[in-house]
Image (cartoon, rainbow, N blue to C red; front, side, top):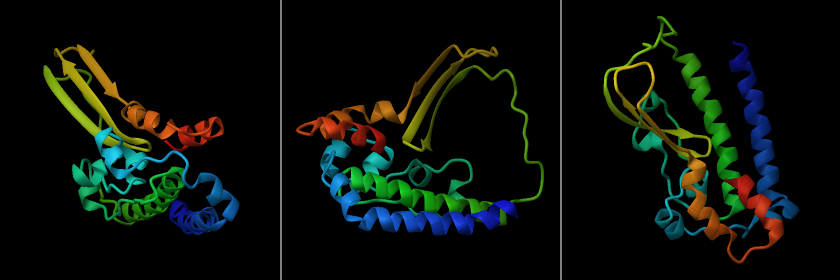
Length: 186
């Protein structure tokens, strides 16, 4: 009940800050046009998460390849077409509002039964490739098991690494003062 009661306040505050951020001239002028990354560049460079979505590409692992209960949760993939730091900021704030809606849906539709499951210490030999949507974008895990309690091979590709080539493109022809803004927006 306490969480549900706080969601309304969080939503109102976030919408307030979104309105300020999207309409306050000084803020908009500082972020608009900084770290440009066209839709074509974002796709070609393998950008993920808000970096990709702020370039107008509605790609989100939770929608495109649902896992856990995401196929049962109604939510929108937030995008922007400005292809810059302002767009990435707007996408992130819109994603906060979607997160509040998802939390509300989950709490109101929580099924009965156990909420905790014990995972086995050892897993069967084999390989698994898994991806999920993290705050910065698609996170990838590859694990190879030999049947023991320790993986034989483990590879993680964080979204920051996936966005690295796009970051280089965003920094080109920019100002040194723009570097922190571009990095923070990723």
